Image (cartoon, rainbow, N blue to C red; front, side, top):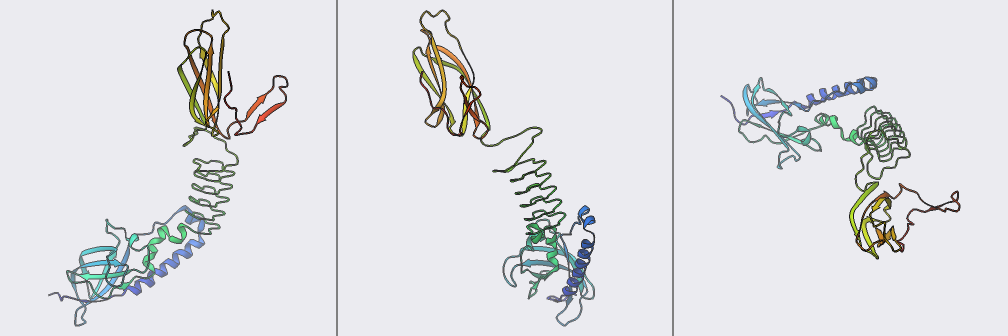
Length: 350
């Protein structure tokens, strides 16, 4: 016959000491073999063992098979369980039982242990949870070594072989998210990677040999591009074609392109018009591209025939910083007059 409401005397401390000794051995080995550790990254288990002694009300050791439910809390009493796992058939021999927590598929154990303090509560069969709860100490937090809090955003990783999110990784070989990786070989998301060989998402990569993706407001001293260049947002070059523009005789026609100034500098790329070559009177047909109301506007004037003139035109617009505007005199072609950026021609007359 089972005796209800057994008292638990837990031998958890011995387990913690043994695990702590194992951690020290592993760390010592890692320090002695950094190069080997860089090539083979150990996978840290996401489970830990819990051991206890079960006695009846009279103090005798219990034998049998029991259902044990373990819960993890943030409070020593009350509160909501952060993690729960039930073991239906646990063999208890001479009072000793062992369970391994961390196999609940619906709740990762790491999520329950991402802060401190944490407490564990044990319930046997359908009886209420034993009181008081036990506080969980150092070793179960080794579960977080897989993505250790201090290593995830390490402030200084001077010679780290693999520093995933190091802020200052001066000699990091692989610094995936380094903010300042001066000599990083592979800095996938480096904010400042002065000498990065491969900086996939570098914001400031002065000497990046390969920069797959430059993030917003990236400052790159020099860059050679092989393959395709994709630009999001405002395009560096815009080409617009107008077809079927009808011009009335002796009338000025204005067409607002909607291209903002001074974001772009626009110019005619080409145009065509058909008119009567046998026009008896003096013919005049002009076109002009300038700025009006802070946008680029095309103007046409037609005085070549007594019927509507149909025009096709193309304009090409270059984004600010990608052009140099020059005005050259036909009398002195060698003396170039360079107009500063942001000073562009306004609409002219006929």
